[in-house]
Image 1 (tube, rainbow, N blue to C red):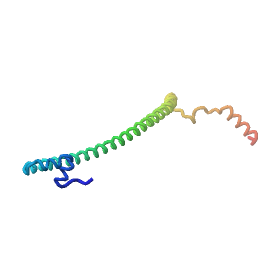
Image 2 (image 1 turned 45 degrees about the horizontal axis):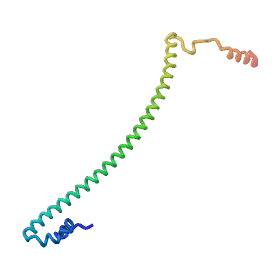
Image 3 (image 1 turned 180 degrees about the horizontal axis):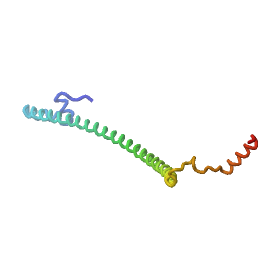
Image 4 (image 1 turned 30 degrees about the horizontal axis):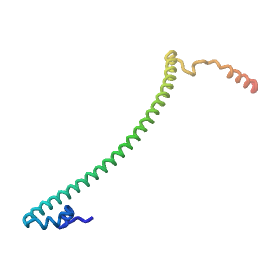
Length: 140
């Protein structure tokens, strides 16, 4: 759609049914004053149209940003839920191993000079039996 540039085109676009009667009924000075007002009105309308287009474009951009932000927020909430689950699992596992460590550390404080190598020098029953069988087979 082309923009009307001449006064007649502007009048025809703004006042389609009144254009001809206005130009015939007004005196030259009145028509010139009216033409100035029409030109000013046309400029204001053009400026308003540009402003409306800019606001419409800004609104579309803001809606796009809102959609992206909502998507990112949803992804972040999902990730936070997953991480909370992982944290719970790791905390449970840590507590299990910490209990085992605390138990072993408690035994160690009761016998500070002993270790696994110095404790229980006697053989278990199955080790004693294995040693006897070995000596019987190989002689000693």
